[in-house]
Image 1 (cartoon, rainbow, N blue to C red):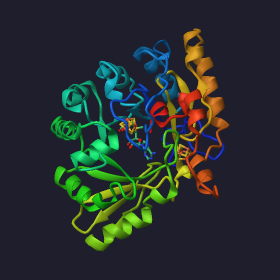
Image 2: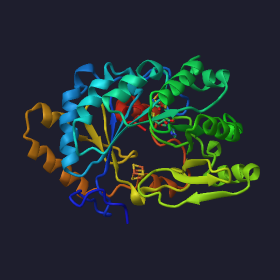
Image 3: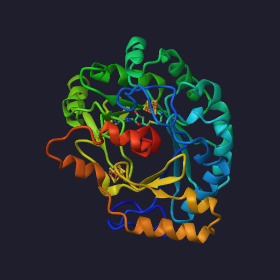
Image 4: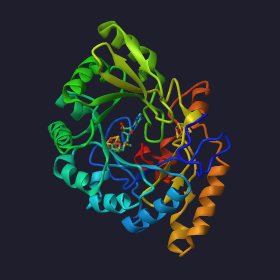
Length: 347
Ligand code: SAM
Ligand code: SF4
Ligand code: SF4
């Protein structure tokens, strides 16, 4: 059974508590990663629809009354949202929240790491798919690899607990960097997490042949390092963790070949206040509407409790059972509803 962060937490049909909330604070991004935003043009959320920081904090406080204890800022690129530390301060004032984290591409981190830490940000995960600047340019369409490395160093020096580095593996693109990235993370004192390339929203060029599976990652690591021991106690965390003989650790997020929906206590709030109960959900629940119409907190709390209690989603497990698997959503559908994009609902 999933961990229960709070006895008062609302649970869904499968007994999974409402525990973690990912806040996508913007759908915009300063990179164009080929597995997330491969197209030339995108439809952006209308500016007036974006929740103000006070509105986000209000909604989060209702979520925390329903059981949420962990909040992660994401996007798009969260650091593109101006004065993000102001949101962090508002969230840090909510004493029910035990953990405020952020996932970022790191480009703007060098300038903001210390301010965010001082404001109360607890942990940082930086996405880094390669150690080669020219490959970074191919993968992201921006020549900004050095800025990311600078951001990573700044976050380490700002006094955060050990960083996490997330690396999406794509066969033939960066799967020759499994071992070098492990060395890089160990030297930095960070924990690397390999992510299987997923067929989510924006991944319009996804193919199963490009996925490097957990099994294969483990075999390649073991062929060099010898013993690779699983670390028990994954709980509701997406990554399964492993230890090497030298004591260093790493994780694998096997959303494609070994999904972890059974223990999933995560939901997502988009920058314009749509609440998604699963990364793969086709539709979200509009919370901005009631908030801006002046609905009472209890009314919004009732919507949240009712929707979560009826939640049955097991998106990644259902996808695994699909026979001929290709990109999840056709490009025409993505253009009509940007909420289907990974960069809109947050990874
Ligand atoms: N822009 C920030 C970043 O890249 O860290 C935060 C948002 S991004 C959508 C969050 C995470 O989703 C990143 O770690 C990214 O690598 C991951 N992601 C995006 N598309 C993916 C895909 N098709 N398969 C696996 N992970 C993906
Ligand atoms: Fe890359 Fe994150 Fe931007 Fe997507 S949102 S294009 S993963 S940096
Ligand atoms: Fe949770 Fe949906 Fe992801 Fe499964 S696919 S782990 S239910 S968000």
